[in-house]
Length: 347
Image (cartoon, rainbow, N blue to C red):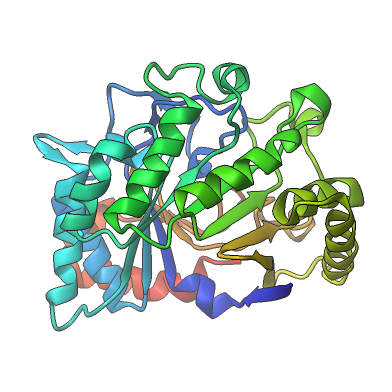
């Protein structure tokens, strides 16, 4: 086991771009990248492909080295006849420009539409994907994760993960949010989720606790902290026996206890079992709120689907509207905006 530390400069080199605020799922805890509650699929809106190319070019010139496409659900993105595959191709082509150079291009998706798009996305230049998989139970999925998804089922998502691995969108990572307790929660599914990830060829399984945010009124009902019981369940799922689970829990609990409330460095706790790596985002609810930032704490620069650049999901920090620079100021103004934003927006 070990701790990965993320300092302010590392985080300021990441840019998360919400392509649309629409989604085809309805996860009850969704924060939608700090935007308004996600709209149902069918009327996706966002910046055009041309605008996003200009933004990413300016961002990379200003020091961004990792670009992640998010949503809502990014696979719903449309720009007239242009699809998300067309957008990925246009962004990837920037890496051939002398003044831009290399940068990572990845995507986080709920996986419902991924299976048929995995190979085209790889061919267009996408490096890798992260897929959300919060439950394998059909009833729990229907009730809590996908109440407005017609084609979505846990099996569809698992098949999409395998398709992403086969297409070479690797390393494929899976995000799982742990919530609730007893029959209501999903911690009892950890063993099957770990096995599904191993069978599909997933490189890393990332476990999260729930974030508190303005649209999540029932946070206290569903929130799970990394106590010894939950950590034992995680270790048992990962290593296959209750004894190994208890030893994992004690070692991980000691690691977590050593990190209190500082903003930086922000830790991720890591354990390996064979080819599958487990990452824990182990944050107590409210850990960062007392410092005046959102429950997530510092993570990356964020661009909303409407063109607002900020440094956290919620909070009262500075924000930069890129609309004027996009429509009136030219590429030099965009570059200047990102150059100023990188040191200024993250808390």
